Image (cartoon, rainbow, N blue to C red; front, side):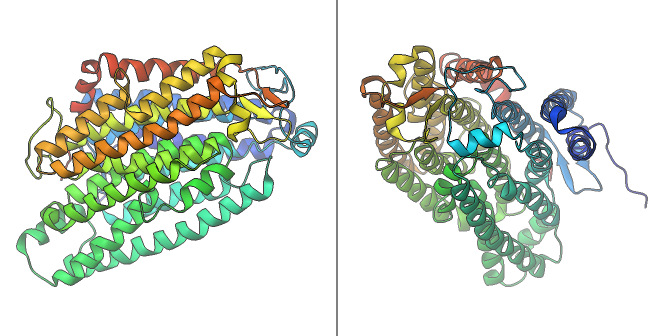
Length: 519
């Protein structure tokens, strides 16, 4: 039979794919002097177009299994695509800011002083900027859209590889601290390759048990209860390793702090937000749809991983003296907090108590929206800080930053308070929903542990706030004057973080619309 392709529903993926190919052609044919602005405009236009197409498809509600049944075009898919593309738009804006401060940005920024190392200033003068980051980002976005929407394990693996391979390159493209950047890229590549291999091995074991790669057939075979349970459990475990590696959960987290520190700041923001959102929802779909019948098998191990992730992120975060490493451990801790909402499995697959009309999928969507706004905003503020040595992430460079630049200091304060879960911020409402769902879903102990560890994470955010407002500034402290693009990212993230905490009802409706898996 001739396959039917739902071009309109798949238009966001197609738009990003076309933009990525055009970006490669720009690298080949556009002169170097005009390449940066051309790539920036093309990438922003591509992501914005895909975002609008996603909203249209989500509102249209013509949900179905598409591309020959390999992609689930349902409520959850369009909700995830909306988050991924929205935050990707912010990350691309930050990437366009990499030359800001030298008067050559796509947004025509100027600077208080020329930041960075001598090596970086020499590279800028030689016009050797990495414009190839833009098509690489778009290719990674193609995988980010496919991965959480896949309805069979082969498509999920393809999405996983498509999103990963460009990221391995992007991590090594930092101009400053070149060796550190390349070390991060190599470490991410080696560990990511192992995780992908284990995921593929788990896929093979699940296929051996069920005779199919599709989620529907796997679920049907589990209902029959035929075959070796050992084979099934081992397959589940190996697939889980590959997924939890991308989520950044313990014990598959060791790459996160090093890669976030070594990679360019916009790429760190992209991985911390977009990759995590896509990976979490890919995990949710696989656990709830094909493996929903094994809920009693994976619930307790997943709860233990959530606790350990929260603990490692919180405790190791207390010892950090680098802001990007601190945000790396913050990402690990928040991976655990997100898993708290997943563990109760309050969905149509496994009915359980609801929270304010939200089930596990809706709460997870709300939580990741709040986390994404705060984290992307925090990385945007990181780009404003520098020293003559280029060590913009050390705490010493942040001493007195809030006093010298009160607007950026206040914005960073709100982002850190949200990550800590302080009331009147989106992070507080996200944690409240997650802990309440866990409590009512029979995991009261998990909610209590999460609450205690949330207080620990607040301690290392408080350390940074103290340094920002009461620390003594170093002699070589510099601040890049932000362009309108960078301020736009900070402003949108700030407004969203406050709105999620003050008027969450406006967003719970969207979270409710994120619920619903096609099977």
